[in-house]
Length: 239
Ligand code: SF4
Image 1 (cartoon, rainbow, N blue to C red):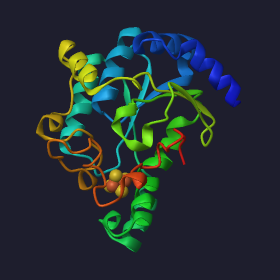
Image 2: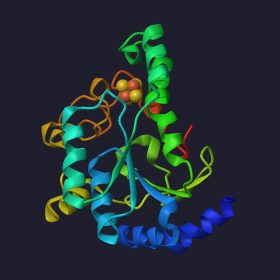
Image 3: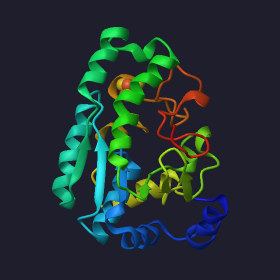
């Protein structure tokens, strides 16, 4: 899609409140739109809003095989609460076996290249499969989460996957997010109450100290500019 079309879409829908934006796009794209949920607090808010529009709406998540037990519990709890089908995509077993045989089970600590390889096999490849047949993916990015997300718009064109990407919560602050979760009793990962603002795979996530950047607990051994798993880049594109 041309940059001018994306600019026009942002002019038309960019100021819509999150719920109205979701409803508009879900009704317009029906089976061709999905939430790519990492079970984050943001994605739980989006799931709550989407289930209120249509419980048949597509939601999927990626099981990398290295998630926290609390995340698996949250998947089950969310499905039970909202009666939505959260489709789970797994990495290709052979690719994981080959990677671990060559680089070791905890390869990600050894180099950025190894970490990106692991993210590619455990996240990017399953994500590509999950995207097949879609026109739009819904994403829980917020601008305040990371220096790599400062320029992200509400609506973007994901060149790598030829998909529209919408970020309904892009302007939401931490306070707005947690007020909404508490007011609506939305299930969330209990690790958030133990100093984990951002939760990914268990070996690549740690708690942060008061005052630390909210992304400091992800791939903490890398510098901030490297800290995307490949699902999102500075331009909001996948790679
Ligand atoms: Fe692998 Fe860590 Fe990336 Fe998870 S976050 S896919 S364990 S490198």
